[in-house]
Image 1 (spheres, rainbow, N blue to C red):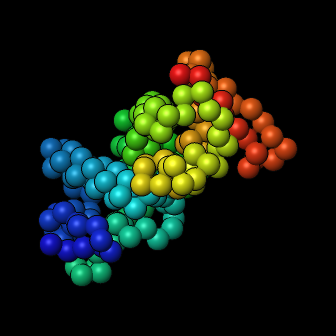
Image 2 (cartoon, rainbow, N blue to C red):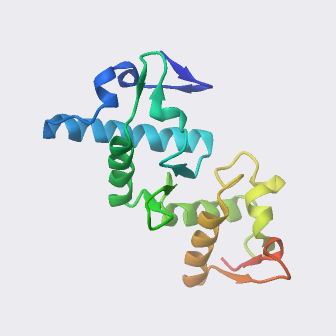
Length: 179
């Protein structure tokens, strides 16, 4: 089994045809599904939130078999994630993609579980403490993309689970939980 750092790559990663968009519909659907799962799994385990379509990304090439995904294939696989709500284009030119290995609602649930597990139901924390504080170490929240975190917090605010308040800078933004 080939690895990329500590990440175990699936068997299809060594199969050259999977680096070329397949012309037969059924085969392409299977190919797209495998790539979607691989991208989400890799991004989750490596805590990657943004993939640049034009940039080097470890999954998009396999030097062992001398294969690289074409721009068209990269676009097709990311577009499939976007169509399922598992990614969003960050720009109009579709050059950067925000990967949602948890959907925003799932991130909101992670935050609620974090708050309950740590007895923070009526506490105040800064946004930075949630994504990089000692309490969040060892959780999916630690090192989380700020944009994704803010969207999940706004969703919880809309549901009346917390209040977001502004400080003098972005690092001073706070959250008052009321669960």
